[in-house]
Amino acid sequence: MCGINGIISTQHSQQDRESIVRIMNDRLKHRGPNNDGIFSDKNITLGHRRLSIIDLSESANQPFFSHDKKLVIVFNGEIYNYRELKLELQRAAQGSGHSTYFFKTNSDTEVILAAYLRWGNQCLNHLTGMFAFAIYNLETGTIFAARDQMGVKPFYYHNAENLFVFSSEVRPILNSGIKTFKLNTELVSEYIQYQTIHAPNTIVKGIKQLLPGHYLEYINNKATITEYWKPEHFVQQPNEFSYKENCTKVFELLSASVQRRLVSDVPFGAFLSGGIDSSIVVALMSKVSNEKVNTFNVSFDESEFSESRYAQLIAKKYDTKHHEIKLKPNDFLKELPNALNAMDHPSGDGPNTFIVSKATKNAGITMALSGIGGDELFAGYENFKRLKELQEKWWLKAMPNIALKMGGTLVKSGKRSIGNEKIAEILNLEDHELKNIYPLSRSVFTTKEMNVLVKQNNAAQTVSEIAASINVNNKKILSAISCMEIKTYLQNVLLRDTDQMSMAVALEVREPFLDHHLVEFVLGINDEQKYPATPKKLLVDSIGDLLPKEIIDRPKMGFTLPWQQWLKTELKSFCGDNLIKLDAKGVLKPNAAKNLWDRFLNDDPLVTWSRVWHLVVLNDWIDKNNIAIN
Image 1 (cartoon, one colour):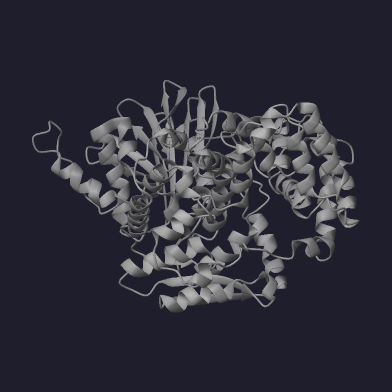
Image 2 (cartoon, rainbow, N blue to C red):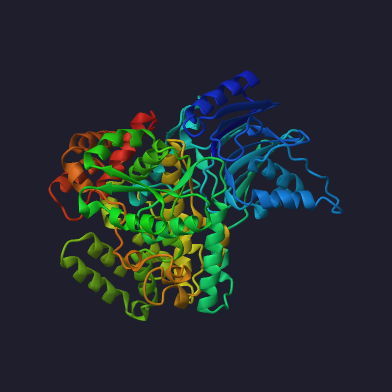
């Protein structure tokens, strides 16, 4: 786990390029405190910051050369099947026409290079892991860069005439000095609507993100991007197995995924909220680990916000070395400035992950497993049930639009609530296909509310395009929704926040539910098996008696804090000042942020804290990073 940087330029001397990369490396020191490396050749300079996890020796430092000195790589992430691949690459040489690769380290980095030498671009089909890397060919002067299937590890870049710059984060490119970057004002509405900007775009104009499951080739000063994996492909795959057979296969794949993710040469642990997903990860870790598993839970004195008793149940059952991080809300508030400073790209979420990651790192842990992805893959959100029911309600398609719009008016005339506003907007749609309903389900504001806030409302365009690109099989509506969740909320909020907040404290986080082999199989399972009665029943039935009933039957809580109260008390001045400054920047309609803030302070039921906070974060991030507006 590391940070990578690079610049290819005919405009800069080697000395200038190396100066730029040193600046970028320094900006990534938090991601890789163990080593710092730079390599230059012709028009290219590569940089690397290392967080040592596998093969802690100096020989595994990067930039790393292949044994024939023809390739050099900078790599961020982990290849979980590197040991099996290493054996395959050594065995396959005999009689295959391929020359033997002589490994000089025990690192997974070297295995990527050997795989690329053997299979070229097709090496990506052999890798199981989380990764973002760039391989430079010293003979041809070309770059091959790739990002993992699920988008766990980031790859940001700026591409201009005779200039290509890339990094693991946005801020090193911002601070590189290559140009003055400006706010992507055309996409401010998307951020307000979804609390994020969806890849390949970012909040900064001119900085892009390589999409998950894609690779990039930079040849003769031209970048070409190719998709090599996409989740929706596997929704169309037939699954003829019985329910019992599918449960068995899910258990096998998930167990293998957890075991693969325990490969480490440093102390490791797991986040344990006490929910189904994190509890399953801890249970499976305990089954295959030779040592006690370190588990970490954030608890609060206020029982309303605390899940600690559920985490303690699992810790006791599996005899883990349990760490309960007791916080008072004021403890969280004290860390909030540090969390905001750690934010590489603005987001409506993230501070929670920063707090847990920092406490875990302080306990001496460098790698931790997480339950992220279980809800998206196994239909754990209430949103799955609602969307499936709406898709199956034949009367929505049979009723004339005028009748549906009248129904929407009636809903809005009742109790004022965010839920009723969304229902009314759905009923007012001209077409009630899933591709049209889904973007509304994930939106923070309705279209009407957005029109009051922003000058140009093109917010739903990217999400609508993602939803429309996924064919809906009536037997696999849930899998289609899973693909939409994966390609929007999971990849652009959860995974981005997890990466930027955990790496801010040099903690590596691994997600067993996002093993692409498991994802491929589960997406092929029909709805009747995946959701026969309750959310995640397929997952629960697959793991047998690993979890006590108290965990399975508990109400879903999530990691919650008294934000509504904080924004009106301790954070009132901070929020108010930032919203006034945001209005002054002119990216919203006049006084839009202040009006929203006033409605929040006056207890308008349509303005919760989450509809305000991400605007506060946006302005704070713009100011901290000196982003030009025009």
